[in-house]
Amino acid sequence: MAKLMKKTMDIMAEGIDSLKNIKKDKAEYKAQLARIKALPEDFNFVYEKMCEYMWSYAGGGSGYDMVALQEGLLELFETGAAERKTALEVTGDDVASFCDELLRNATTYTEKRRDKLNREVQKKLEGK
Image 1: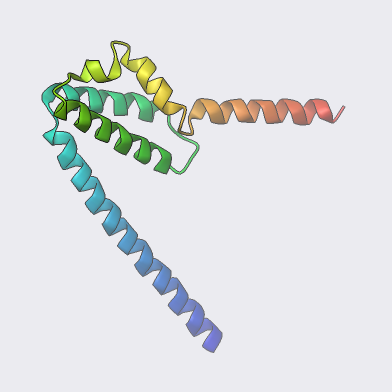
Image 2: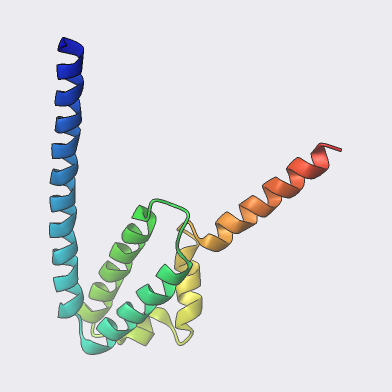
Protein backbone atom coordinates (compact mmCIF):
# COMPACT_ATOMS: atom_id res chain seq x y z
CA MET A 1 0.00 0.00 0.00
CA ALA A 2 2.85 2.39 0.83
CA LYS A 3 4.45 1.76 -2.58
CA LEU A 4 1.21 2.52 -4.36
CA MET A 5 0.75 5.70 -2.32
CA LYS A 6 4.31 6.83 -3.12
CA LYS A 7 3.85 6.11 -6.82
CA THR A 8 0.57 8.05 -6.84
CA MET A 9 2.24 11.02 -5.10
CA ASP A 10 5.14 10.93 -7.58
CA ILE A 11 2.73 10.96 -10.52
CA MET A 12 0.82 13.86 -8.99
CA ALA A 13 4.06 15.78 -8.42
CA GLU A 14 5.08 15.21 -12.05
CA GLY A 15 1.69 16.47 -13.18
CA ILE A 16 1.99 19.60 -11.06
CA ASP A 17 5.49 20.25 -12.41
CA SER A 18 4.21 19.78 -15.94
CA LEU A 19 1.40 22.28 -15.36
CA LYS A 20 3.88 24.79 -13.92
CA ASN A 21 6.08 24.40 -16.99
CA ILE A 22 3.10 24.88 -19.31
CA LYS A 23 2.11 28.04 -17.43
CA LYS A 24 5.70 29.35 -17.59
CA ASP A 25 6.00 28.53 -21.32
CA LYS A 26 2.67 30.23 -22.02
CA ALA A 27 3.79 33.39 -20.20
CA GLU A 28 7.06 33.42 -22.15
CA TYR A 29 5.16 32.93 -25.40
CA LYS A 30 2.82 35.84 -24.63
CA ALA A 31 5.81 38.05 -23.84
CA GLN A 32 7.43 37.03 -27.12
CA LEU A 33 4.24 37.87 -29.04
CA ALA A 34 4.22 41.32 -27.47
CA ARG A 35 7.83 41.84 -28.57
CA ILE A 36 6.97 40.76 -32.11
CA LYS A 37 4.02 43.14 -32.27
CA ALA A 38 6.27 45.97 -31.04
CA LEU A 39 8.56 45.58 -34.06
CA PRO A 40 8.22 48.04 -36.94
CA GLU A 41 5.72 46.87 -39.56
CA ASP A 42 8.30 45.59 -42.06
CA PHE A 43 10.13 43.57 -39.40
CA ASN A 44 6.87 42.21 -38.05
CA PHE A 45 5.72 41.10 -41.51
CA VAL A 46 9.05 39.52 -42.46
CA TYR A 47 9.35 37.80 -39.05
CA GLU A 48 5.90 36.22 -39.40
CA LYS A 49 6.58 35.08 -42.98
CA MET A 50 9.97 33.66 -42.05
CA CYS A 51 8.53 31.70 -39.13
CA GLU A 52 5.75 30.35 -41.34
CA TYR A 53 8.34 29.22 -43.89
CA MET A 54 10.69 27.69 -41.32
CA TRP A 55 7.98 25.81 -39.42
CA SER A 56 6.92 24.17 -42.68
CA TYR A 57 10.33 22.46 -42.73
CA ALA A 58 10.86 21.98 -39.02
CA GLY A 59 10.20 18.67 -37.41
CA GLY A 60 11.68 15.52 -36.13
CA GLY A 61 12.94 17.19 -32.99
CA SER A 62 11.34 18.48 -29.84
CA GLY A 63 10.54 21.86 -31.38
CA TYR A 64 12.67 23.62 -28.80
CA ASP A 65 15.37 24.16 -31.41
CA MET A 66 12.84 26.13 -33.46
CA VAL A 67 11.72 28.13 -30.45
CA ALA A 68 15.34 29.06 -29.73
CA LEU A 69 15.84 29.91 -33.40
CA GLN A 70 12.80 32.21 -33.37
CA GLU A 71 14.03 33.88 -30.18
CA GLY A 72 17.40 34.57 -31.81
CA LEU A 73 15.69 35.93 -34.91
CA LEU A 74 13.53 38.20 -32.78
CA GLU A 75 16.59 39.55 -30.97
CA LEU A 76 18.32 40.12 -34.32
CA PHE A 77 15.29 42.02 -35.62
CA GLU A 78 14.99 44.07 -32.44
CA THR A 79 18.64 45.07 -32.80
CA GLY A 80 18.18 45.89 -36.48
CA ALA A 81 15.13 48.01 -35.73
CA ALA A 82 16.97 49.83 -32.92
CA GLU A 83 19.74 50.62 -35.41
CA ARG A 84 17.09 52.02 -37.79
CA LYS A 85 17.71 49.36 -40.42
CA THR A 86 15.00 47.83 -42.57
CA ALA A 87 14.13 44.15 -42.32
CA LEU A 88 15.73 43.45 -45.70
CA GLU A 89 18.92 45.20 -44.62
CA VAL A 90 19.12 42.57 -41.88
CA THR A 91 18.13 39.51 -43.93
CA GLY A 92 19.22 40.51 -47.41
CA ASP A 93 16.93 40.30 -50.44
CA ASP A 94 16.88 36.48 -50.49
CA VAL A 95 14.88 35.92 -47.32
CA ALA A 96 14.36 32.22 -48.10
CA SER A 97 18.13 31.63 -48.20
CA PHE A 98 18.47 33.48 -44.91
CA CYS A 99 15.84 31.13 -43.44
CA ASP A 100 17.60 28.09 -44.89
CA GLU A 101 20.81 29.13 -43.14
CA LEU A 102 18.94 29.50 -39.86
CA LEU A 103 17.39 26.06 -40.35
CA ARG A 104 20.85 24.50 -40.41
CA ASN A 105 20.66 24.79 -36.62
CA ALA A 106 17.31 23.00 -36.33
CA THR A 107 16.07 19.49 -36.91
CA THR A 108 14.08 19.42 -40.14
CA TYR A 109 11.94 16.86 -41.91
CA THR A 110 14.46 16.84 -44.74
CA GLU A 111 17.28 15.97 -42.35
CA LYS A 112 15.18 13.29 -40.70
CA ARG A 113 14.26 11.75 -44.05
CA ARG A 114 17.89 11.81 -45.22
CA ASP A 115 18.98 10.01 -42.07
CA LYS A 116 16.25 7.41 -42.49
CA LEU A 117 17.16 6.79 -46.14
CA ASN A 118 20.84 6.36 -45.31
CA ARG A 119 20.10 4.02 -42.38
CA GLU A 120 17.77 1.84 -44.46
CA VAL A 121 20.20 1.57 -47.37
CA GLN A 122 23.15 0.85 -45.09
CA LYS A 123 21.22 -1.75 -43.14
CA LYS A 124 20.08 -3.56 -46.30
CA LEU A 125 23.42 -3.44 -48.11
CA GLU A 126 25.55 -4.26 -45.09
CA GLY A 127 23.43 -7.37 -44.58
CA LYS A 128 24.49 -8.84 -47.97
